Image 1: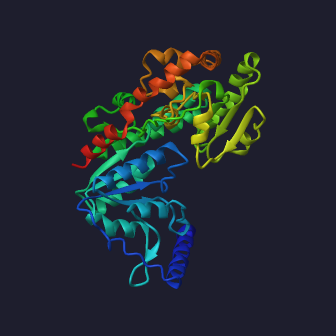
Image 2: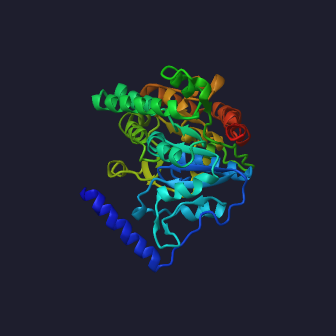
Image 3: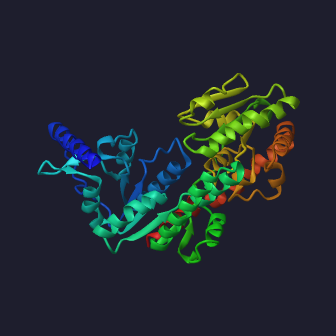
Length: 404
């Protein structure tokens, strides 16, 4: 009861502020497309901070480019609804929800936005398990006939199960089982299930038999044909990238610090590694040193990819396609990772050089690649073929098949 009263007064105060500042948005005033998709996520996609946001942003661009309009809603509380990315999406032509007042000076809440825009919507793209669970009933309430997609992003059950298998914490298995129940319920309700890869589609099939509803729409990567690449001998450092809100990345950096780099330094004491990624916790920042550089968030990551010798991603648990692996391939930067990191990619004959699943295997692969220019060049040149299944043309065809 107390929370409800508190929320009531917060929203009332917000409405008064919007009225005072004359903030009035007509979400339907400039509609120009014949077909619209509503996309709901936990946040306005932060395309330069995490892989899921980058993928969703590219999907939005594809829809707009193919004359399909987009309404975008983030699951923020109305009185906390702020993001530096809102204006970027509005400039693209996306209709983005922001708290505003109607002509009667009443606050248009998130549900009010749904009620207003859903009559114009043919398809609803609900991004992540909790979002589907929360917004499915609201969509059905205001547009029964809308086709609703469940974008899993990754198979959360599988990710937490793998974390349990690695760490042995029974709480992780409890979380995994709760996610399995949630994800399977979402799959049953959805008109289409969007998985991140064909391998994840197969994993889901073990638990959900109606696989005809599932379609793989992976991360979107385009090979960058650099006409003046930095040559092998002028590249020295190792590189890791990953947003630290995602716990597998925290684990991977700790694993690098505690086991992999000490082994590597015994053979190559001069080698250093740079760690970039948004929101590093204090425990990660404390690892910073001359040879283990914690940089944090970087707006433009390209100089790091273009000047490093090897990308290292020792992921010990997780699920789905790893955006960091695709990003490395975009730049033709040879990489060393684990089976978890390589999931969904076909490295062909280079697999035994790229993939290692123990500390020693990872270190041996780094040394081999770091010291052998011929191997390095072969893997670099093969990158374009490896990411072809994730090209714009391939993914566009799958996205558009959903809305026809």
